[in-house]
Length: 327
Image (cartoon, rainbow, N blue to C red; front, side):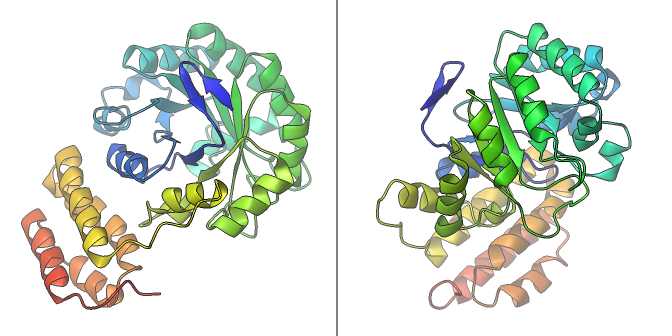
């Protein structure tokens, strides 16, 4: 059991911050289906981007329940601290610092996981943000820059000493990207050396893996990323399994279609119909992988250009759906 601000958690199952995926809509759906908290998409600290439509959407917390955690990214201590204050003014309950993004466009600016190469800069950034806001500050990072330089334990100890209240660690280095398999020995070492909570992330996609990771690392919770794509029910399933309860029944076709429709309508409201129809394609594509004839449905859906036609296509699929979900 641990606290973040006024919120209390017991082995939380968390939705990861994922650019282009974990927008307000997807966060809300995952929270409705058992996620204990969800971290926003990464927000750049550059103040010139605050008027940017994309940045404003990423900061949009309207309609999300529970603790509001906003992730910020940058390499300038003054700008990062200012971004933290700005996010708190907009309602953030927690500020999360991104030190895990492996994308080249982020690392080329010496932000994201590139920061792990400069521990002095990390110390300056963390100190600046912790001093700037009264809310808890957390950190998400990788195990290091490359397999030969897994310095996450050093950075984690530094973060704790500087007042960071929780760290989340993805079990890959920056150079690994999302290739290969996550390793959890480094995360176990971090947990053994810290007194603040540690959340494990990477390749957790079912109850067997969740139990294995928690046993191996002794972490305080787990974070789910790609395994939630089109499958927000994974949070309920993992929560039941970890607490020794019977696994909830798989969602029926009716339930999946209802959530898909809910997701579509909410995307149109957030992005407008022009952009919303485009964003919808990837999410509906992920949901459809769990449906009979999902491939054929995706081929039709991905050619549709308007919101009404997308909804009609979904209704037509539902009318013709037979049987249960595909295995």
